[in-house]
Length: 144
Ligand SMILES: [Zn+2]
Image (spheres, rainbow, N blue to C red):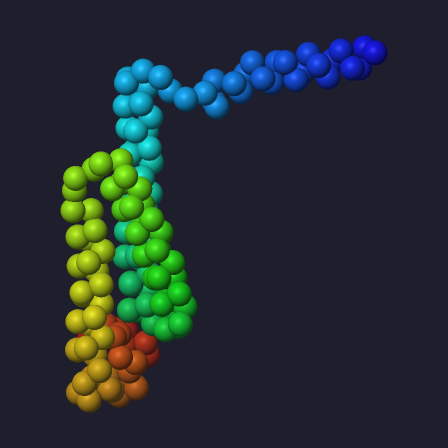
């Protein structure tokens, strides 16, 4: 019986503590604060993803990442970025937030196109075979 009373008390305490988390915010101020927090979170997340994408490009350029791994990770980051952009859109943020990603995609396409020519098939320094899209020789590290 004492045990049961304890359970009921705990349950009541839990309801009292967690209830505010599930109730809808009423005032405009609360809605604005909520939106601002969500905006901060999304903006931070976006910055992290952009930084991850940069690191990824660098690692790939240095030849430390396989082509498949690079594409898998890159598309993962971009899908997450797209989700965030969609959420920002729902929050009514009027900014060209996808400019950075568009530029990154364009740069990558340019690099791939430039690297696919026959002139870039071998490193001019050490003669090692090069994969298209690399900015550095995987063998000697020479910038291409
Ligand atoms: Zn080389």
